[in-house]
Image 1 (spheres, rainbow, N blue to C red):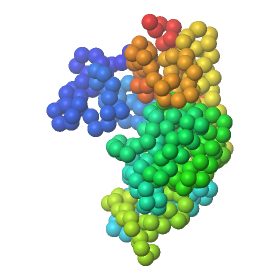
Image 2: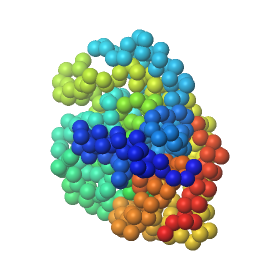
Image 3: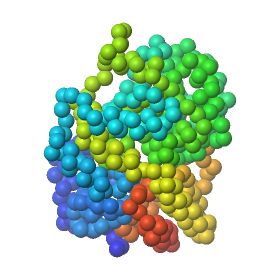
Length: 408
């Protein structure tokens, strides 16, 4: 398949976009899924593929921004959700379903002693920050430059440079009396899955522990790195952890958890409790059963298989870049990857920011890959999913080679 039918005159996607603009600002509810002049509209999705309203089917390396680690419509998840739909979708009481998923997550992550569910990663981070403020009695939050932790404003941020431990220590010591928490994404996705340098995260952990600052590990994307998540992979233990995406089995979800003494602020049975956490659909049984099945299928062996596929992507793309003498590079870990339209050494956010020319080249590559039948994010991030095969990966790499061969 070559070309994008959704951009042709009279396309159904164009019609839908015109209708959307009449009722939605900019014609969308998720700015992340917009691409100029308008996006393709999807009719169906199954396994590793997505079919748009023009009838074109593409291999999906976005998987709803890494959330669908088992692809679209996995039979085991669909069966569990179908059974739950006959029993109830949401009730004003707790159910066993949330207990089962909570048990799975507490068992996998050593630093999580207690956990609570939300409906998005944004909510999970908001509640973790509230918990840190309540526990420490301080108000400010430090985060690393260029990292994304949810769609909300936090006016009291202190910015830290990623992979610069000495500078981080100086800033934290300077603001120790005001800082409730440090938010860290262990494999920052917005700068492009930049690897933490050796001992960086353990040192941040050591400094925050010494200064009495709550360390929040934001693993909403990076939890898919390993069976026990990135804390096990990189050798540190956070006070609080935020989760989302893969733990919901394709349904809206978020979670935050960690040390029992911090999480106890939400315990309604304890005297002196001072934080309230509600939510009409928190822990709803449909999401909980889907998440349980999704996590149950993610065995250590399956994580190894996904990591092998991810490495096949990264090596294959890197070989094309080297063979063709291109000024590009590829980053990522385990099942995650990203193409960068420049050769700069990536160590922090400033080193990852593309120039206008680089961004233009990235945009052209994205559209050309869509035309070849492969979906990446507009900034060329991707993730493999369990329905994918080595042949799927090889087909995508071959398509990337064709695009590079004809690119300006």
